[in-house]
Image 1 (cartoon, helix red, strand yellow):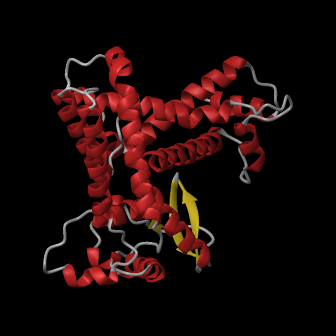
Image 2 (cartoon, one colour; image 1 turned 90 degrees about the vertical axis):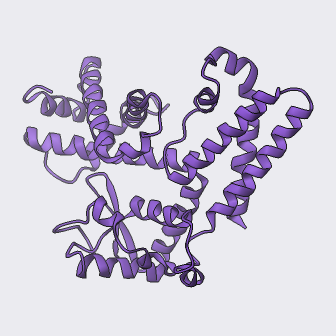
Image 3 (cartoon, one colour; image 1 turned 45 degrees about the horizontal axis):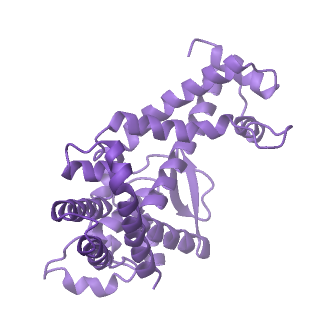
Length: 329
């Protein structure tokens, strides 16, 4: 965005004197910021997508759009106007304006990623909720910084100093995670401060993903004795296996009812195997069409929606519901 244009538009929005062109210009700028953030922080989320650039743009638009949509109330403010009113720092120059916009866009983008995870990944949702309950019921809190939520001690008001980076966090010893919830968080905070020489703050989403990753790992005999202490880490792999068995039973019914040919049946089974693998790997789930397209390279979207979508959508809902039910037990 051109020099001083951002500050000018923000002032107009704050004074409610903006034009449609002002909003369009700012919205496009925000989308570009969101795309940059996604490329920098969430590349693994889109790594399995066939149309990665398109998916990133879709998520960026979904993240930014609510900032520029008023509620049904005729006199309601835009979301970005409400954010401006709540902002407790001065916006006197272009640097202040840029800092405000970046913070808003980063936070919105991170919220959108979390929402997609919760919608598509019942394992992420279960761990996320369990951790959030632990934080609220103990002496911890979450602080957002540059789009990332961190778990800190309740006495911490703001983050200062060096924060642990993703590569360092992903390399922390597995044994740190073989603890009960409260002890797990306390131990991680201590380790990050004392051993990594970083400010004691745990990246929340990275913790969720690390717990999920460990949960799906095959433990050998040398680590099996540690598993009884791992009561917080869920036995996720059996849930996937049982749910896949359920999927095959349902697809068997369609096959024996002659709604599916032998080849169609095998392709759908393979598609659901790929869906389960993506769930375990923590990647973003593609559309059902894209999963079946891998098995049927000549499949068009029209044929998919005419012939296969209803069956796959029905079976996928059973698959997901079965996982959720097991996690709630």
